[in-house]
Image (tube, rainbow, N blue to C red; front, side):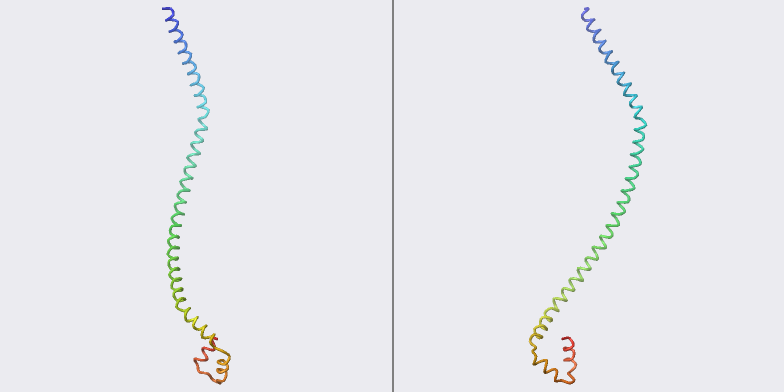
Length: 135
């Protein structure tokens, strides 16, 4: 029986010691928490200021995004118009190139004798004058 009492007593002492140690730890943690309280409040205030700044920056970014989207739509429309003009110009060029090539061939076919024949005219016909001005 004594052995049981000793064992119970030792267990009770150990439990009381653990409770005392825990109370000391809780007390030291409470002191540490009280010391960190102002720092935590400052950090919370800093976080709040930062959140406001982030909200403003997000709003500005959204505004810029909408402006960029509008400008992108305008640019896309202008690009379509430009492509249409380029396609039309290419079509006109494709039609004009055969005539230009034919004119080059006709010009290559001229020789000195043909030009000398034109010099003989004191007043050449109007169509001949127009062709000669082009040359």
